[in-house]
Length: 105
Image 1: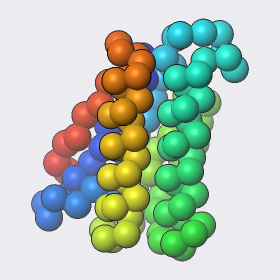
Image 2: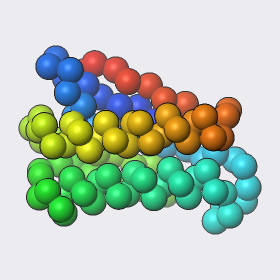
Image 3: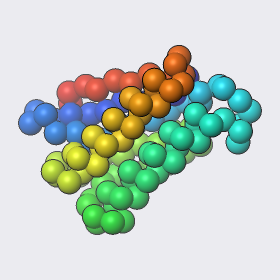
């Protein structure tokens, strides 16, 4: 199962996320659910750090991607919200393979 945890600060702004795991729908490299999630997560991280040039700590491992904003930012909040919405849609498309959690930090 893919687990996606999103972090909100005390001002209710999204400031980071951690996505881990594997959907388990197909072998590695052939899993459409995993590919969909991975692509969306990488696009989110690249948009924040490369397109908007916002400072964030990003860690990419084999089945683990983490992003944490160094300071809260309205643009980053909206971009991360877009990822969260997209993952909710993917969760509906691939029931039982994606778990989402939003928590305050």
